[in-house]
Length: 373
Image (cartoon, rainbow, N blue to C red):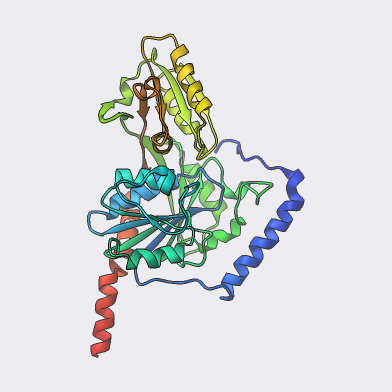
C-alpha cells in the first residue's frame, strides 16, 4: 500500500479524549442493555462505516438493491441528510431531493419500484415502513449509514472502509476522522474494503487482512468502482461512452462529494484537460456558484468540451433552476461496485441466504407451526 494519506490533528487530542469518553459510555450502555436495541421479524441489513463520509455507502446499497429486488420487496431507510422535511417521510415519484435528501432521491429515481423512506429514528422508521399501507409489503430493509444507530440490531451489519484511509491508521474525531474507536469494528458481521485499485497486489490484501485482525465470525471482502456510460442530464436516454472521450476533450468536473480523487484519476486516463470545481460533501449550491460553473464552462476554448458530475451531485442540481449552458452540456457519470478476488458469488450467497432464512413469511409460518403444535 502507498503511504497513508490520513491526516491527524494532534493539537485537538484533548477534545478527542472527551469524545472517546462519551462514545465509550454510550456503547457500554448498549452493551450492558441499559439502552435498548430492538430486533425485527424482518431481514434488516445495515450499511455503514466508522469514518466520516466517503467510503461508498450509496453504491454498495445500490448493489444490494440490485441483488435483492427481483425476488424481494426491498425498502431503503435513510436519515435523509440535509433534507428539509422532518420525521418519517415515505418517498413517492414526486418527491424531491430537498424533501428526502440527495442520496435517497438518487436511489428512488434509479429504483422506482422499491420503497425509500427517511427517518432520523431508524427504529421508528422501520415500524412505520412495516405498518404503512403503501409499504407494509416490504420483505427486506436496508439501513443507510446506521452503524452508530444502535437502537436497531440488524441481522447483518456491513461496515465499509476506504482502502486509501484505513481505520487502523486513523484516530477519533476531531484528531482524525473516526466516529468510533477502531475496536468497535467487532460489531460488524461483514467488512468491505472499498475503492481498491484494480491492480492491487496479493501482498496488499494480506497486509489489510492482518491489520484488521478480524474475529472468526467476520467476513472480509474487497471492492472497487467501475464507471458506466455518461448520461445526459436533460435526456437520460442519451448516452456517451466514456471511451469516446479523446485526449482533446476538455472536461469541467463539478463535484460535491467526500472524495473525488478516484473520479479525477479515472478521467485523467482519457484526457489531461480537466478543470475541477470541487465543493464539500452534500454541498448546497448558491446562485453565484451556479453562475460561476456556467461562466467557467463558457470560458473553455475547445471544440470538444462537456461538464461531468456524479449521480449524487446531479440529484442536488436537479432542484435548481439551471441555465442552458449547464443543462445542455452536463453529463452524469454513474459508478457501480465490483468485487475483487472472485468474491462476488460468496458475498451474494451470504446476503441471499440470510434474507431467505429470515424472511417475514418464513417466520410467520414457523410461528404458526409452533402454535399448532
